[in-house]
Length: 145
Image 1: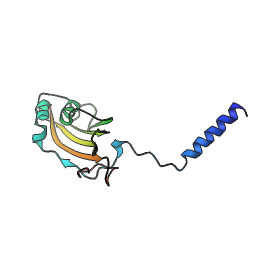
Image 2 (image 1 turned 90 degrees about the horizontal axis):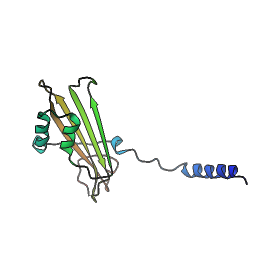
Image 3 (image 1 turned 120 degrees about the vertical axis):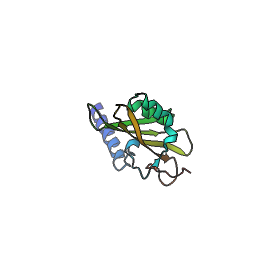
Image 4 (image 1 turned 135 degrees about the vertical axis):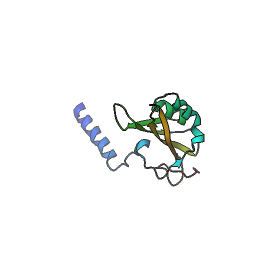
């Protein structure tokens, strides 16, 4: 049997083994969000002071969410205008925590530019994803078992 035919047989076997296999789970940033918890402004007051000094939206958000300790972090920023945005929404999705119950977290942070052209934190929301339990494929505010 020639090498070409061996390659065709191997390719066909690999293809057949993948047919019917479960689809891989979507990336954490694409998982549904069942509910989020509104974070009180007192919990991010340091970031608010940071924003008042003229920081950029991403710098402000990273001040809110803190250091990352996990395997994957997605940061998605959407501005209302590309040249001179007056509002920005930043989503931070973290996954692969070393914690035995909480797998990851999602932060949704809304910012707006003031008349003094500095960014102000309008709203911070947070949700979690568990390693085990009933809602492994979504973010919610339930306590992880």
